Each structure stands twice: as structure tokens, then as C-alpha cells.
Amino acid sequence: MDRQDFFRETEAAFSTLGLSALLTEERKEGFFHLFLRLCEENAKYNLTAVTDPREVILLHFADSLMAARHLPAGAELLDVGCGAGFPALPLALCRPDLSVTAMDATAKKTGFVRMMAEELSLSNLHVHTLRAEEAGHGEFRDRFDVVTARAVAALPILTELCAPLVRPGGLFLPMKGRNGAEELQAARHALQELKCKVEFTDEYPIGTGDAAQARTLFLIRKTAATPDAYPRPYARIKSRPL
Ligand code: SAH
Image (cartoon, rainbow, N blue to C red; front, side, top):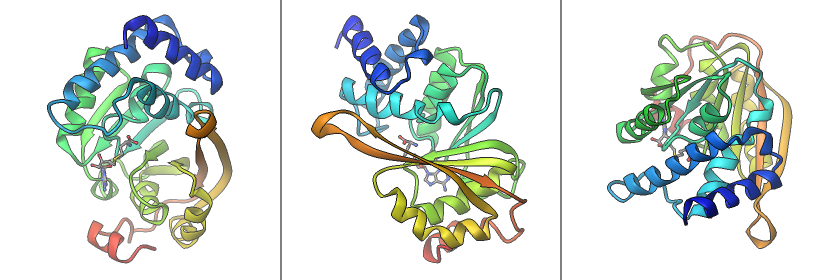
């Protein structure tokens, strides 16, 4: 897909999802660069299963930005399990007011995100190769205004990975698919243990017609500091989810 077609597709997808206000000429160039580099690097090592241009625009770029309307101006945001940089990269690109930290356990993923932060001159994006449950006992504990995570783990596990990194009073914002309601039900105990309360559920379709996919975004408030016992070691979190 050439540059002009890519721009047209991006404008159309963003417009349908009410994201046009986030799209400037410069950001369109940024997304095109990101798309080309994602395909280039993906040919060398596995970064993402999604490389069709229309899918990258919809499922990576636009989908990442659906969280933007819930993010307070100037927030310090952490994206846990950012993978190739979603939602961290589009949020850092389209919301320069945010300070975005992207975290992933895998160095080749964070290596790509760091490279993109440099190539796109995103001075508001910081990148760490770190496991969330280890970060939860370090300098990042009780720290961020907002913690996002997309496609990382089921909600009971994800809550134990992410909630310890949210400051008391801050938001945990898991980006989920069509089984959001069931996941929430399964995570009731985990949320209670980790001092978290669901404040708002944002449900919307992404894509049109037969290709439409349901999305669920939870706004979860952390009401108090995380109890000392959490997060537990990963083997424990996985074998005995809260
Ligand atoms: N958020 C991205 C990537 C999803 S794939 C997207 O939506 O496209 C899940 C990613 O989470 C992988 O890159 C994996 O390395 C990372 N991950 C899984 N468990 C993790 C943990 N405990 N701490 C940090 N990263 C983790």
C-alpha cells in the first residue's frame, strides 16, 4: 500500500471511530513510518501476527487510541506487556501531554519499541525490559496514574500483574475483547484483594460489517495501596489465580 492510500485508509478508520481529532499530518507520517518499520522488522523476527495494512491501521493503531478519551491530560501512563508497542506507541504519538512508559518481558519487543521512540522522536516514551510482577516490588510500585494492558493475560492474572503498579487513586485500564463481561466476573475476587473497583465499562465495536469485533475497556480505580503480599511470583499467580 502506498503512502497516499495508507493516509486515506487511516483517515477513514479514525473517522469511523471518532478519532479524527487525534490525527495530524505529522502523525499520519508517523503511523506510516511505524507501519513500514513494523513490516520490515517483522520479516527478521516475530513481532506481531498483524501486518496487513488495513488491519495494522484498525487493530493496532486505531484500537490503541480508543483508550485515549479516558486518559487525563498530563497523566503518567504505564503499558504492561506492550509487545511491539500497543497501545504505548500510538498513545505517545497522538497524546504528547502523556508521559508513557512501555514495559515488556521480552528484549526483542522492547528493542523495537525503543527504536521507534527514537525514529519518531517521541521524547515522552520510555521503555523498560522488565516483568510486571518484578516491577511490582520495585521503584514502580504504587506509582502510575494509569496502567494499560492489551492482550497480555486473563483479567484475574492481569489484575495482579498491573494493579500493584497503579498509584492509589489511579486507574487500571485493561483493554479486552468480546468476553469482557465473563472475564470481569472471574476477576471479582482478584479486584477486591487488590483494592480495585470497576468505575465504568466502555463497550464498542471495532471494524465494520462482518469484520466487526467487540471490544471492552474497563476503567478500574485503585482505592488503596496494594497489600504487601502482592504481586506473588509468576508461577504462583498463574497456578493459583486470585
Ligand atoms: N500489548 C501488545 C502485545 C500483546 S502480546 C498488543 O496488544 O499487541 C503479550 C505481551 O505481553 C508479550 O510481548 C509478552 O512478552 C508480554 N508479557 C506477558 N507477561 C508479561 C509479564 N508478566 N511482564 C511483562 N510482560 C509480559
